[in-house]
Length: 138
Image 1 (tube, helix red, strand yellow):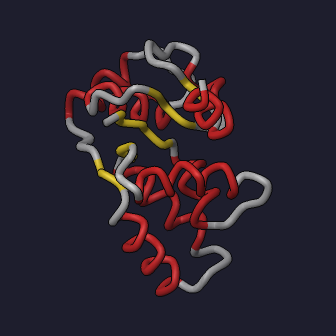
Image 2 (tube, helix red, strand yellow; image 1 turned 90 degrees about the vertical axis):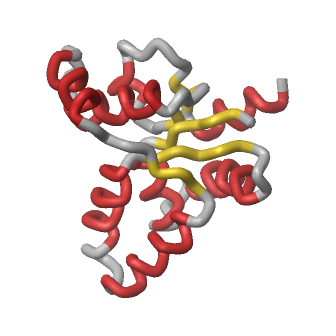
Image 3 (cartoon, helix red, strand yellow; image 1 turned 180 degrees about the vertical axis):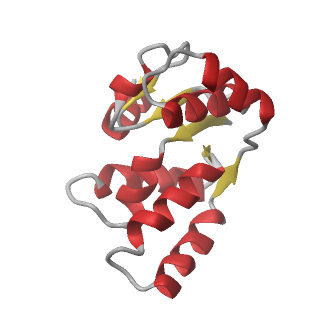
């Protein structure tokens, strides 16, 4: 089963029901719920998603969304080596570097994001949700 790494913005799009992004992301997460793919996220994504969503939603509701989301995904480890590699990587955005090295360590086939510019140094494919869905049709 393919392992797909979701960037934080994808998690926020889904849990925040952000249009027009929600539809494609929900299709990816349906595949995960049907156990056709494994979606992997870093702990940073949960923290950042909580931070963004509690600005506009009740804290208890956001925590409930996070709990339910956790059921259909795998949370990878972010350890000392990932932080060290990220600090030395030359990525412009430290968070993107942490996400990237987390995806590599988790043996993910692709990174799904709306910020492909943040992953220019990636050795694995970086795709938008729509690009990923289209790749499944081919």
